[in-house]
View 1 (cartoon, chains in turn red, green):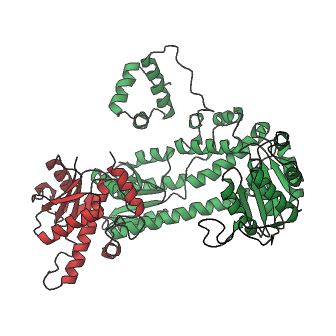
View 2 (cartoon, one colour; view 1 turned 120 degrees about the horizontal axis):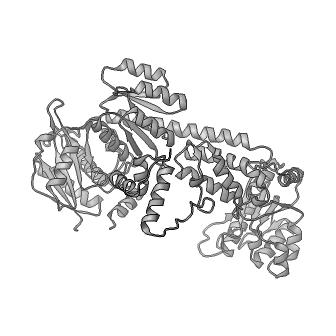
View 3 (cartoon, one colour; view 1 turned 60 degrees about the horizontal axis):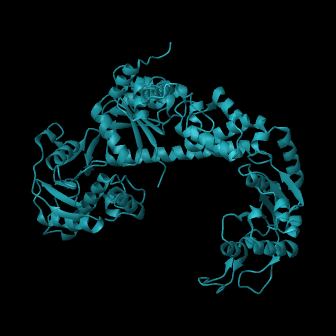
Length: 180
Length: 448
């Protein structure tokens, strides 16, 4: 099977962001990437009480609706949760096929034209979180090396402090995860 | 990379168990879940965990009652309680009962991430502290060598005599008897204890590598020697040089060593200057050096230089009386290192340890205990936890059909797991339904 990551825009319409994400993935991981057709967030994932989307349900939907895909990365600007977490920046099957990233808390309200630097930081975070969640789909767990993209994304400071690259150890583990 | 920590999540809500389990697995932890306090307490009877995360409000036995019972069994058990927003009173009660902390559901990613990190770091520190305490307790005047058999008491007496001198000592004994441990004990009690204990294994390196490691080298001595390097003989100055597996030294190395022992001087590889040195020499071998001399493989003059005082460590099979104390010591040491709850050895397992002839000596015993701790599920080491060389499973059934074998194997595993269907099915790598079908098929039943 072709090692292709398909980005599935879920109600997000920012071609620049999606292209940057796709390029970042192809740069950091030994995978090809393409932006696929836009999808929709499944209605059953919305928790009206919390006003948030259930991340695990979105993953299940992505997985079921793209049976032949190698890897999928859903991108949404909605706020995500799981029953135990107040919010999430992303979620992924560990291991599995589907990953998900939310721009909601990564600073997506920043207007591109007025604050180009802020926008660059925002794009950088989305790219790192997308790569991080895809890493989980290959069985990678959180890394203790703060510069590694697999370091836990506990807050913005830690996300900004890490690089978009895997450390040597995680690269090796990914290679193992990719081997047939 | 860190050791995989084991966490037990106890919550009656399925979605919480799943989402918290996923969250912790992403951090690289090994996670087990229980849907109520009774199931969790049952798991705690046979397994140990680095951390328990327990919901306070559960039907049946609640989290506080479970916490009380956990603490009665193990006062040090690390438990974090989960509580819903607005139930802080219960959380305070939990802290009074000995919980490490509490966390309000749903969690904030930063808060839970830092909390678990802090607790696990403290756990590691606590275990290291216990290990150090155990080492201090067992490191008597002869280091961590354990033994009350007449042979060992005689050996300890000899060690005491040689420790106060600067004589060369040749330690003889089979592989795994603890020759290096004894050498360190002699060094630690000697006047050179402040200096370094420098060990070099003649069986582990090629001659050229050993030469440059032992003697050091000068800049340009060989391709790649960009600068000069101090050798182990330099490093051992003021301390002890331990020549391990000396029987494996090459003929050239034997000549070089003889010169060092005679003149107490050496030259670095590629050097022209003699370097004077001052260290005590301890050597060890598992070979019969006198036989090696006869065969022309070992120099007689070097043997006389090394064999000033000889200490022979008896093999474990010749000091069977020491096995129980040694096994208990190793269990305690490894239990702390591996963070296992197994605290003793069952009489049946001890009998197997006593029956074995231990060709690999103390090292083999240590490996056997470590294996038992890794595979064992109970608080006592059981016969089935020991390596196959010690524990020979029950006799082959007379009926050699595949069904008879399967029946025997399933029955043995069921007994091992006290007829816990989930655990047995997991061990057999089949689902519970299949196991039930097979129990029915073979008419297996629990003995009264």
